[in-house]
Length: 194
Image (cartoon, rainbow, N blue to C red):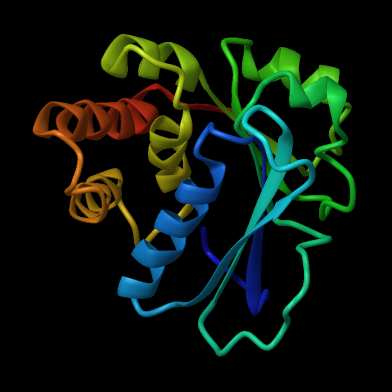
């Protein structure tokens, strides 16, 4: 995403423990760091158990980042668990022209209306759950969401993210790495922006 006048781009992830939001946040930061950006990636947990709501955050900048607090006014919101559209307030504190990247089979325009977004906001939808069930046989939607996010960054491709994912997770079986690579690339291809 072009940073324009903004010095720091902020991302807030909404997910549940075990869905990979923390890992995806870290991978996004590492990929952008390799592209010369200054980055932060950190999680925020409530009840520390699998399935409990959690958030993760990124900051991305061309200059050193001094802030050390939660992201309160994100430019990008990634909703890993589609139930969190209604059960949490993912729009809280967002800048008016925020981009919402949502794991859902819903139509982007219908979701936009349901979320009551400002006219300047955009929605990028991808059925990441379906993709990972087809590719991995389990619900780990972080990989396709990373692919979808590549729509928003002019200096990072889904291929670059997939390559980094493969290097970072090299301890996994080759079949799992290949399935995640396909999931990342499909996330890019199947995402719809409204």
